[in-house]
Length: 184
Length: 235
Image 1 (cartoon, rainbow over the protein chains, first blue to last red):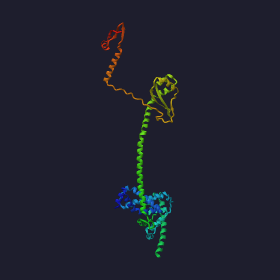
Image 2 (image 1 turned 135 degrees about the vertical axis):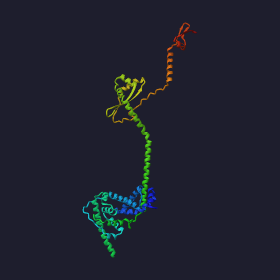
Image 3 (image 1 turned 90 degrees about the horizontal axis):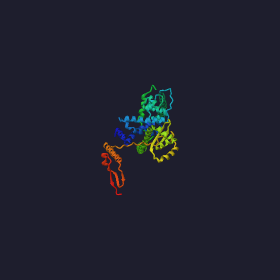
Image 4 (image 1 turned 180 degrees about the vertical axis):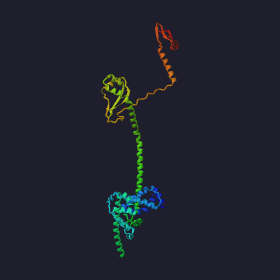
């Protein structure tokens, strides 16, 4: 059964179609939630909230392609995560005027698997992590990030810079360990 | 941030885009789905109950509506009566205030006026009057009572429109009997004949054995002469 058929049946309230869609997308969506919140339990709760909203609003969704569905679902999940973080009042960030450009080592990045990169991002503090996720992974401009998080644009830039410095350090350390492992 | 390398960021994005799970953390899809399914259907059930409650509330309102409707109607009636009787207020107030003059009291009792005087905030006097004719025997007793009756004053704080405070009686319209013009003519003729019959007297007198009497009126009406006749009585 194609995704468009599943969407049609889910719109009519078919529990089987809803379950099929959940099974299809839950893993990817959970990873998105995990990138924003550290706790696994919180991420799962946010995943359920996101899918709940998705099934409630599915009647207004017109299926075009799987990519469009993915974008829609991802947007719902990110909004849920940002709402959760805003409730916890974690975005009290101070603007830093000195913004440095930190190039991340591509070679070091190539040596790492997706899971390892993921674990590096999760280790970042919440402010750095959120801006890094929104800018680098979701591809949002600083202006949009600033309006979503309720911070200044400069703050968003400085947070990204600091996140990259920290990641660079982590990558270097990881690279040294990788070299050690390789030499052994 | 001016010298950002977009290719570097794209590399990160591509690496993380395909990630569906972490090796250490197993995600219990079935358990999560059960929770979600429960939440979805729980809301449906609560929505159904909301509709049920709404329907029950509407039904109750419909049931209680007749209880409230007549009281509103009554209030409208009293308001109308108050407006009608505002013109008569000077007379009715006078009837209560002149209680020391016995002649006026008796006249006021003969046509009884039950007046309720109300003083509202702006000191307007609103009266509601009911006219009722009393029998003559009760006039003296009523007069005695009236000497002690004070005009009822109800404070402005008390509700005005309750039927406990105001007894408003709508004066009944007099129903005139519809009479056809022909019937009207006949009845007048009958009445005139009756009058004539009563005017014509028949009497008897005795002179010794002779009784003098008037002849039948029908025969005499045409000529307008009274005919006296005599007959011998047995006594």
